Image (cartoon, rainbow, N blue to C red):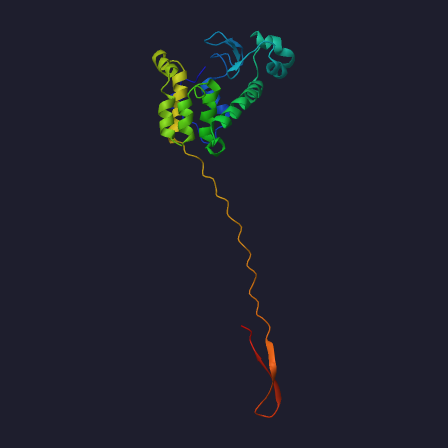
Length: 220
């Protein structure tokens, strides 16, 4: 269940993806973190929004011998197990974000968190106009378009947790800008040191004292 204080909270730049999404997604029903429950659509869910499938292989691996008890709601997942399950689930969302957002790796950490959160719930993947605006760098326009959503309007009316979550993402979109990429500095061409050419002989001449001397000059 979403944190009721979400509207007042501001995620920090260095906040992990797990902490960012947990603040809105929660770890299950209020007062029962880690226990399996039915979501608003009647789907069996556990942890940070993990949809439990039949014979769920990932949940089985993480829950081990307690799988049946955890799946039936008799036993909760630990905090560590919930994070392991989230880490697995989020990988596919990160990969999807990188496919849909061409400059994803250059975005700030807070923007990346908000984008992945949008894919985690599906409200961003279901808005091609928002994705297009993000890709052309119109982040303010993306923030407006992102909230131009029937589910958002319904949530505002019903006062559910979807609207605050989307508003938090939209606020980050609005302020976002691509992270500065340091341009590569071309290597300096090594210029060989200027060496003085040797003096060249130009023959023998007689000095005023009658002695023979070599006449020399610097080469041009």
